[in-house]
Image (cartoon, rainbow, N blue to C red):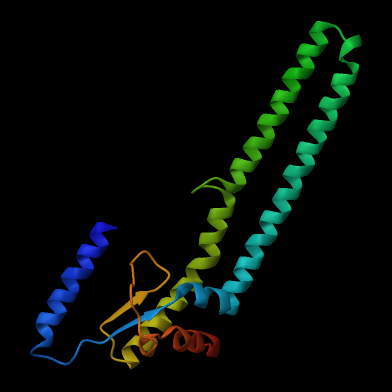
Length: 177
């Protein structure tokens, strides 16, 4: 974070120094959260991802419920079982629990889980379109710098006249990018 702030200060210092001999510095910003919340392709991708997660959660819940039911039945019957049989059943429960955990990790673990791979697959083309639209709008507006209000770079003050979020969103919705 300190590196980002230091880099921004260097860029601004250089730009301000160069500004004395050239045209005025023009800076804009976008709010990527607004764009992602309103861009139809991003909304669909998010919906698809949520559908996948919901399906996996149901599968995990079902497997867990089956395991709990089997364990409850085991507890009821354990008084009449031999120790060898009890040990074997307990090992089966441990194996089933590990299977559930492995399934959950294969779907949701970062960065190799199926969710994150699918998220990258769906969002990369969308982000590329957004960046192209930002580039086009910022070029039309003759902006030297564009910050993301929702990103890691801290934007302490922003005059709404420099907000190009809705111009970018409009360009994306018109389908030019």
